[in-house]
Image (tube, rainbow, N blue to C red; front, side, top):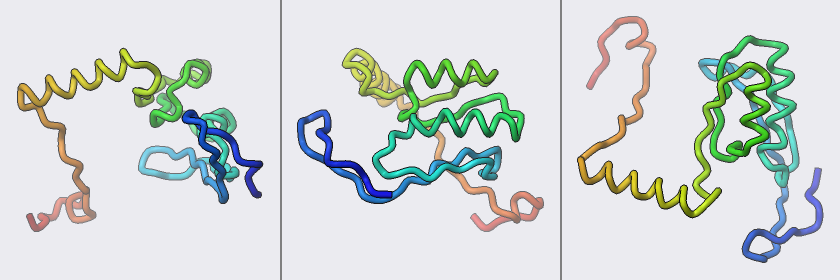
Length: 134
């Protein structure tokens, strides 16, 4: 699969993609349920519909967890239509007011000393109840 002719991005520059994308719908624990291989130029949102619809027939799930590339009204609606609660990161590029609010929220968090939880790894030893080195 090769891409089409170069397209113009939002800044008017010509861009093209060569390659592939593997879109994977996973269950809890990262277990793959369905995968779709597309050209690199395919927007993530275009793969959301076939993944969600076919995965719905294979597993029962309650939530649609997605990154900000999927933050568009029709994907929220599709997720709700499948009986899922959409948990989709907000795309700050949707509007200047939203971007300003997110920046202000970050500044307020810094002002009061709020920090987010650090990511942590669960090891096999921790799962089995054995002690792990610090």
